[in-house]
Length: 204
Image (cartoon, rainbow, N blue to C red; front, side, top):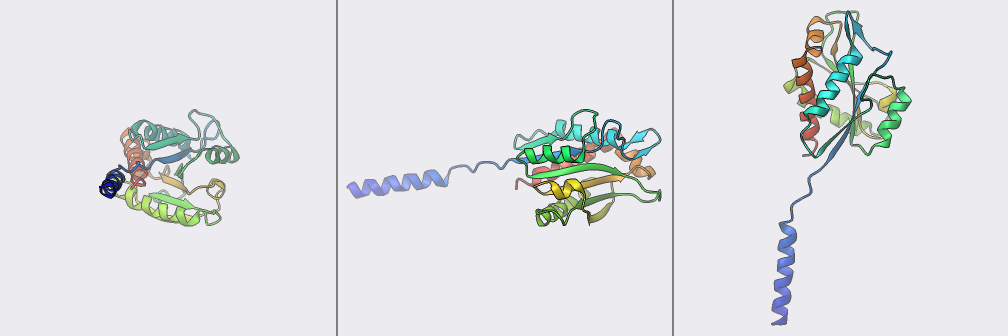
């Protein structure tokens, strides 16, 4: 009889652990809001890079309704941060990924679309490349910007962040279509939502 109760108790314990719900994965992401203050970044007429990436970053933060996605911004106001200061902020936070937001420019006004940059000088190069490919698949499905590919560059933030890092050039201010899209309320909202969709997919 005692053995019977031991077996029964063991069965109950096994069943309890079998039905225990798995803790949801939390994704912690840093959005590097580029430029700021007297550093306007790329400009075209009355449109500038720092204002656009600030607006998109704020929308990413505001649109995030997932408690298991944590969004951190390197800057929340219009002030300039050095590249070293940005990396210090990034590496201080326990994060899974860095997305550094930028807007491109080119003498060729026909140049358009978005680029993803990673660094082969980073210790997380392979993971960064894997996430860059996932981002391209996810973002291209939802964005009106043309995909221009994944490129490597020894950029300071990419090679000094101690976690996977992607630098996103989200269109060209020198291209009429891209400029109108990224500077519009609807365009910025779509870009922010597309980035959030990608981030949320990392929980799977």
